[in-house]
Image (cartoon, rainbow over all chains, first blue to last red; front, side, top):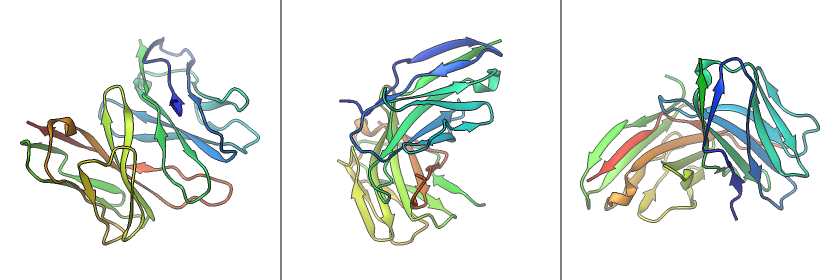
Length: 116
Length: 116
């Protein structure tokens, strides 16, 4: 079974609208971390936001927020007021198990295109 | 410059040749990682290292060799390159996570490798 599933290969969104990128995960470990990365066309991987499995509140970083629904095992990225510069690939990733296991498992990504 | 660098940024080689991709980080992070990025697969972990002289296999290690004699360097060697190893290779680093937070990984700019 896929540990990280991103079911939207591509999305087109009008500029200034909010956008939600879906991510579901599969783990039996009670301690895990969820990450979102952005990869613009230039190719670099940019860390956006992190959510710990024990965090009581949803993570927010500026225009980015993470809609964390633990029981549903989903960690959707929400971008408010989208901008043209948000056009990129977005990857969801998970780190499982005890501290000291630093490996990340990535989803296949969602290509977001913002339309002017 | 501070950060994580990779060299070369682009490489074309022939089947059967040995190729070494270099990765250097200036943060003194304990952990370093090598990923490959292929269309439809997201990023897949090849090898990682928890400290100097400690390395371990990831999801797709076959055909690759790593070493880590110094904390700041983590070279990846393709001993006999094959066309299936044509990919974009990313190096990443992170500090060891502590109780309460899983640390993000910081990525290098990537190396685009073509095996003819």
